[in-house]
Structure formats: C-alpha cells, structure tokens
Length: 183
Length: 87
Image (cartoon, rainbow over the protein chains, first blue to last red):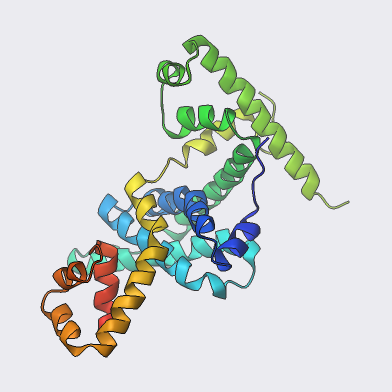
C-alpha cells in the first residue's frame, strides 16, 4: 500500500525548500484548483489558466504565512475563489454582465469538490493499480477497452477490477471515518 | 451497493468524475515556479543595479529576458512587468 503524506507534512516539506515537495504539492492540488475554476466558476479555458497560475504563484509566495499547515486545502479554495471572482469582474468590465456568480451555487460545488478531494486522498492511499484504473475510468473517461489495452487485461476484467477497487476505496473511507470519530 | 458514512461506490465514482486532471502544460508551468522565481529575483536585482539592462527591459522586455539567458515565459514576463514598476 502506498504511503501518502498528509497535507500538513507536504506543506512542511515545501517550506523547508524541498524541490520535490513543490512538484507534489502542485500535483496534489492541481485538479482541485482546476475544478474550482472550471466547474465552480465556469471560467473559459484561457481565463481558468490565468487564475490557475496565479493561485500557485501566490501559494508559492505565501505558503510561509499559512497559519496551520492542515488548513492548506480551504486556504487554496478561498484563494482560488477570490481570484476567480476578480477575473469575472475584470471580464465584466469589457463585457458587462452579472459578474458575481450565485454564491450558494458556488458553495455547493465547492462542498462537492471537498468531498471529491477526500475520496481522491483515499484513492491515493489505496495506491496503484486501483488508482490508475479508477483514474482512467472516472477522471479521464476512458473506455473499458482502452483501459484494457493500456493495462494489458481483457476488457471484461476491467469492469470487475473497477468494482473491486471502488470497494477498496470505500473501505479506506470507512476506516478514515471510524478513525476520526471521537472515542 | 452499500452506503457507509455517505460514501457508497456509486457516489465515489461520481465524486471522482468531478476531478479530471488539469491540462499537463498548466501543471508543468506551476511546478516550474520555483525556478522561475529564482530567475525573477536575479533579473530584478540586475535591473536595480544596471541601468543599461533596465533600459533594455523597458524597451523590449521579452528580448532582454532572452538575452539574459532566461526563457521569457508568459509567467516570467507578466510578473517581471509588475515587479519592474517598483524598481
């Protein structure tokens, strides 16, 4: 089973200037920031890219100011949210429209993305080959056949593997939930 | 499908779909930030000390960055433009 670092451990390594840690940091949170820009605020690709780069630039510059290393995910969400709103307001100056999105709708998307990140963390904990199979099927939208070709297994086997892997992730989530319950 | 602590298999699949990978180029550019930052620090320090270089930057920023031996990536160019206002 893969040993995954907590967000706090990763942030701490980034602060110490570990060059690999920053790569891992971007890898870990890139989907989250991307999803907030594209799903939460429905930014067009070039605008989403501007915000995405700005988020990581500011995160790199201000990681030292983070009060609690554990809070990096909500901190990034807040930063991304603010920059998306700034971008929308800037765009509205050129093309007048209702710049600010529906706050409640954005909150709902962000809450779902938070749950998705929790699932993603459990998937990372389960590790490969489940991580790869589930990532290809759910996140990259690849067919059984494509996955079978890449991983050298019959397409029919892919479906049962997906089911088994989902069960492993569910067990991991179940264990986490039990572990976080007050005794 | 079993429902446990709010995460049954169907919901897990649905949530995973919410997080497709960001475009590779975006991720790579963000990962290169520390190196870009080091380049920026050096370029700004040089602009502060060398008025000829500062003039080159003002005349043609991208070319001056390239002549100084750095890749004039959009990130470096935009940040440098902002930083030079303070020099």
